[in-house]
Amino acid sequence: MREFTSPPLASSPPPVGGLADVVFQHALDDPTRVALGRKDEAGRWRDVTAAEFRDEVLSLAKGLLADGVRFGDRVAIMARTRYEWTLFDFALWTIGAQVVPVYPTSSAEQCFWMLYDAEVTAAVVEHEDHAMTIATVIDRLPALRRLWQLDAGAVQELYDAGAHLDDDVVHRHREAVTPDSVATVIYTSGTTGRPKGCVLTHGNFMYEADTVIERWEPVFHSKKGDEAATLLFLPLAHVFGRMVEVAAVRGRVRFGHQPQLNAAALLPDLAAFRPTFFLAVPYIFEKVFNAARRKAEREGRAGPFEKAVEVAVAYADALEAKAWGTGPGPSAGLRMQHQFFDKVVYSKVRAAMGGRVRHAMSGGSAMDRRLGLFFAGAGVQVYEGYGLTESTAAATANPPGRTRYGTVGQPIPGMTVHIADDGEVWLRGDNVFQGYLNNPKATDQALHDGWLATGDLGALDEDGYLTITGRKKEILVTSGGKSVSPGALEERVREHPLVHQCIVVGNDRPFVAALVTLDQEAVEHWLTMRNKPRMTPAELVRDADLETEIRRAVVAANTLVSQAESIRTFRILAQPFTEEHGLLTPSLKLKRKAIENAYSHEVEALYRT
Image (tube, rainbow, N blue to C red; front, side):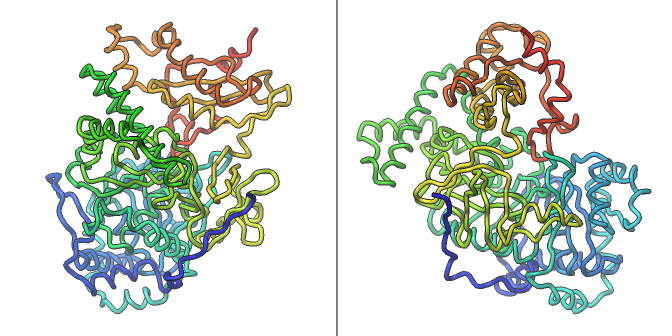
């Protein structure tokens, strides 16, 4: 199939007004409804009602106006995922300002480019380190007039500054915002060059969020009739996290913020907040699964855990076959095994995610089919989707009740997916962006008569389910003329619990090879379980047993491809690829050219005869 369109939802009205309108409407409709959860200084979650959130947004909007922010101004936010980011988002949207998100890990030069290109007039930063980062380039930012620091009392400072203004001043600004007004300029991660600013409108976000809410609303609940709640831990500088924020506010979903993605911080908050669903990237699901496996190994239950995994995968696989009319469903014996493991294994996996999660959505990168089947068999249905910054997050997703594991689902309602002659995925719909800021050449390359050329390669099956097979610019061509898509190989190698990252090389080389980094936590567990002494990174990469383990991962990956496309050799690196060293984007994607340059000696060594 070359093209598939999902019909729009007949019940969805066209977007009107701006994103901030619902904050005021919800407070009018049901002022005491709990809209958000917010941590107090003691670390306890407290409720924020719709009326309280409205009042805070209004007070902050007044302060922004009093401090010189005007309709159409661009204001940067550089912070982790926290309550104040959402507060500033909606206050800025209330007065018609445009938000420019900046990753909190961005370097001074990255900050400079985004703030300069967007002609940012004011910036909100989280703490003094961020302020100092911007201070190092401020002499090259002539448009930047104001800088507020969250941890230095910026919110209260702005409340006080605007206290004298009438509410009507804010509402006049809010009423001037239309769906065509620009809501945000989000910069791409820059895997293929200098980041480009994607111009997204209020209408883009309203269409995206409202479509997701209506089509996937059943998955927001752990059981029918309960309160929908989610914990947002995705970066709000990324379009995926931003879409979750907007959808939660518009869909009346209680949500809280978690600024740290490490398990030590995230798991206690999942237990305390008890979300009914969440949205994440595959990395999070891998972490939960690997933590459960390591715990079982420490307790001497590695065998039963692996059996529980097999049962979960087989159970979900059988249910999928039944849903598609290709099988009878789980056998009586499989159902009995599943029931047993639900009590002793799966319930503990769910408890680690707060106990109430029954559904989740995954995006940002590909999720392995087997991992998705495991979570479904363990009682947490993961709906995988696909999208870009340019499509305001999700363009496709697996629909409720019709999941096809290993695919990124069908186009969301109102969206069309087209596969071009060269295999590139093209998208068309009301969530597609206006273009790149100050970059008409790049805009013309991306947009073709309303179609967005994504740069991703993919295929549609007979039911309109999309599978992403690679990136056009990442295709390797060996010196023998063989074209190789590295993504599938890298993902399969990464499935091994000891592997953190994998990059496949081989462009203009006689064969394909790989560089592999290690998951330090998993390696420490592996050493303990085998009574091996602790080793330095340099010693680890020379350990014969560890090399054997990684070789197994490479052999498994090679089963996916022909011999000419297979990984012939590999090298284990002592250190991971990091954003700080310029080897990863803020969304943790590999910067291939930068990695190959940084490890040029290691790459050359792979090809020495």
